[in-house]
Image (cartoon, rainbow, N blue to C red; front, side, top):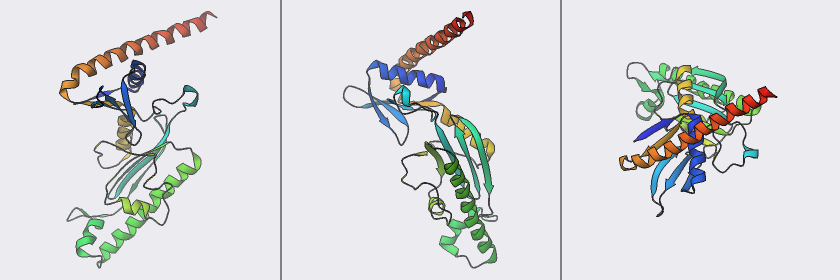
Length: 243
């Protein structure tokens, strides 16, 4: 089972878990917290919103999270630079990489039929330019901004072409900032990019049905904390008005 929660409530839940003294394990690559029982068995997985810093980060070191969202499929790419969830820049690339009659990517076709025909050569040329354009835009983002995470969705077939482009990718395939988006992505366009970003800003609880009561208990505690924080914020604003 899985359950999505908004960014603010996810932050409250994380705070509740940390204050509870529960056994927790953090997986940086997946940006998720694992709730363990006393025997060390995994009970609940809690995928954190990408805009939240890793648990245990001192408040003084907490800064807005800047990240890239990179979505690539054969002939289509949408990528953007985000600051704490807000899209500051984006670009969509399209390329003639798919054989229309067969509906198959030229890269897959090469493995069986070769590249002798003129149409094949055109598609290969556009494939090369496609990845060069992607990496040029990525380089521009990395030169202009500090990037904390790289959220990516790209098929294994295309990965070698991304990293093998004549225009170098500004990170390698082992970069610890890489974050594989755990979601099926439709053909990348601007709206799909924004939808992926909305997904990345939500928290997600993943658990077996027999853990339902535990999850409800945790969410209830987090809800109470979230409401208390809202009340404190309102009270603080009233105080400032009085002064």
